Amino acid sequence: MTARPRSTLAALRHAAGYTQTELVNAFLREAERLGVDASLSVRQLRRWERESPPPLPHPGQQTVLEAMFGVPLAEMGFAVPGHRVTDDARVRHAEAVKRRTFVVDAGALAAGTALATERGHRIGARDVDQFRTQLSSLYRTDHTAGSAPAQTRADRMESALTRVLSTGTYTTRVGRDLHAMLSELYSLQAWFGYDGAPVEKARRSAVEALTSAQLTGDPLLHVSALETFILLSVKADRAWEAASAVEYAYSLADAAHAGATVRLVIALREANVATHTGDLAAVRRALSRGVSYLGRMDCDTDVPGWARFAGVGEVDYATASMYLRARQPQRAVPFLRSAVSELGSGYSRNTAWYRAKLAGVLLQAGEDEEACAEMGAVLDTCDGITSNRLARRMRTFAHQAERVRTPAARDCAERIHETVATTAGSGKV
Image 1 (cartoon, one colour):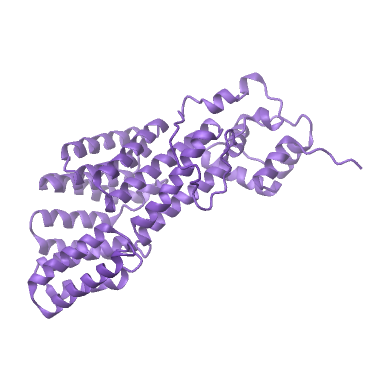
Image 2 (cartoon, one colour):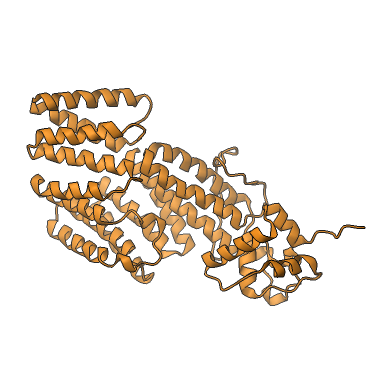
């Protein structure tokens, strides 16, 4: 018996590594993610693959299929009427996504991403999901191990993403997803730079994030890029620039009807700027807004991944910073203690960072023994964390402790110097 020739859709499914049941499940997940009212059953998929010509999918199904495979519906073996044709001109030169060409290392692809990137390779939802998984893992790496290892992985992912954007072929929706992830990746690289790289290098990544976000037309992604840009502007002593970025972020949040968590992030950045300039009244106003947003966060139904760090601990930390700026370290202590206690187990780097600050403030407040105990806890847990900011904070504590001239302070300072010296060669701490 002669075998029935495989249909184009079946060939695409096999090439993507799906069984029919797996494709149906992936279709339903993609429809939910896209917000498209579309369903699919195994029975309907079998009809599409068996009949010639197959029954025409309805417009919602067309949107999901094109996003999944990165191929216009007409190239999947369907007879598509002219008004519903997505031709290569629309796929490759979509108005909503202007593809950019970057100079990248020809061999640099992100680890674990088995994407063929020869010119013309079709990029679909499965490829997008692989990148999205890598992007999520960068947040985890930063939270648990610090910015340096996360930066190395981010650089490889940037090369892979820009290569795909430059050489691949994809639908408008897939292109928009790729560009959105590139913007978020640049924001992460800017944050990693804020944690340890020269400020101008980090600012270049922040500008790339702003540019990519603007190309996507997503106001919340633009806010994500702005919140890191604000921190870097403060670090570069460009408070006027940071203040303008705060106002712009608020206007974008208003336009996007953003939830309380996103607005809390902006309020925290507003507090950062006001603390830097010494405008304590403005800090209190920003923190009052932040507390108001905290009370409404339970109503948020869809919080962007980049904003999920914001919560009670960050408000407490910002409040402690305000009191330190007012030269009232004793009043900062309870807020720092609260900030440390609010951080979950997945935030090793931030826990060490907050706790090291608490140790320094306790030392300023004359609580020498408690300060050294807190710093000792940091030293006990900082192995495996790579953060230049944390290393600088520990060195500062050591220099201050040496002036206290108590046995506990002297021993703590010596331990810090030994730890930093031991880990300097490995890049840790």
